[in-house]
Amino acid sequence: DAKTTQPTSMDCAEGRAANLPCNHSTISGNEYVYWYRQIHSQGPQYIIHGLKNNETNEMASLIITEDRKSSTLILPHATLRDTAVYYCIAHNDYKLSFGAGTTVTVRA
Amino acid sequence: NAGVMQNPRHLVRRRGQEARLRCSPMKGHSHVYWYRQLPEEGLKFMVYLQKENIIDESGMPKERFSAEFPKEGPSILRIQQVVRGDSAAYFCASSPRAGPSTDTQYFGPGTRLTVL
Image 1 (spheres, rainbow over the protein chains, first blue to last red):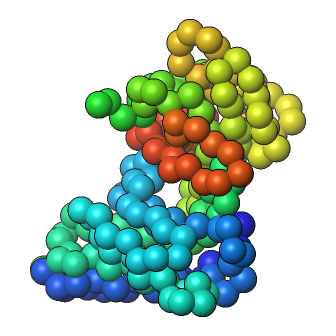
Image 2 (cartoon, rainbow over the protein chains, first blue to last red):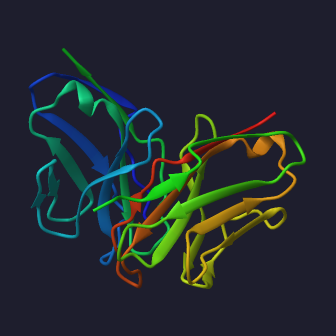
């Protein structure tokens, strides 16, 4: 898996969009970008994934740069329940490699 | 559609005892993965199984740990003669398929093992 770099932590105001960056400058052509989150030691929750194109689902949007060296996860309207550790993973096989992630704190 | 089920959610064992952790994958999923999360650390891959086959156990300690996914029933992660260092959260994930391309893994709630 390509190494990913994420900020250690970030705060976000409730109701505002949360933009979570991820750098994966060594990503290879067949590696997908996956995002998971872990809320207070619960099991990791799948959020979204993409290869080249931007993706959107009911939880979030994923913006991948044209050179695929970085991406941004967007939570459009953050709520207190979005407080969690967010993991960005670049991989193309079954072994997910979880780094330290970004601890996101949503404040009222 | 029920998600990945794990039980027990919490397990306390004394040093030297055996721990058995069970995982029922999502309906229609035939691929199971086990991960371990030590305190204050990220999840680490342990083993990947399909029905009746261990595909990759490269992340699992060579001694005391074993895993199976029988034709019928849940996947079992077994830890023999537990030591305090085995205290961790053990997560199971499942996917409908796996291969050269990725397939989304869905995680269970985990089993928190405490070794006294």
